[in-house]
Image (cartoon, rainbow, N blue to C red):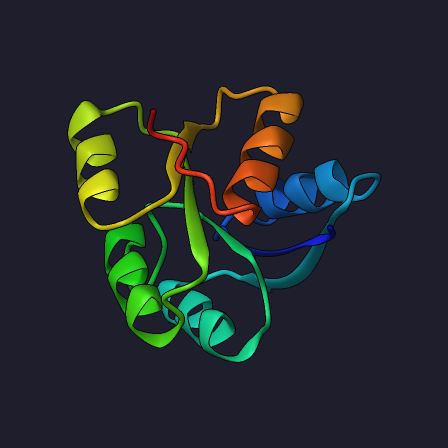
Length: 126
């Protein structure tokens, strides 16, 4: 099964690196956003399995985006990908319905595995 992935990340180099990371996998990047509002638009209009979401972005932080995405596309798995290793952020993401939370320290293999698992509907919190 091919996973259809949306990436919401405001830093161009990070977004480009993520796209390259998924090129040789069964994960297709089908949309990219640089703002929170752009991520919500993508989630509403693109057919995707997973949204890889940064927390700090212009026009809507990741928590706001998660709440909006769950309204417009409740089946879309949302996986946070953040520089912040804060337990309160992780707890909030979990409480709001994110499928999981990875820090930007994660290795490429961990990220790919997490996206695949989220795309299959797995909960990565356990």
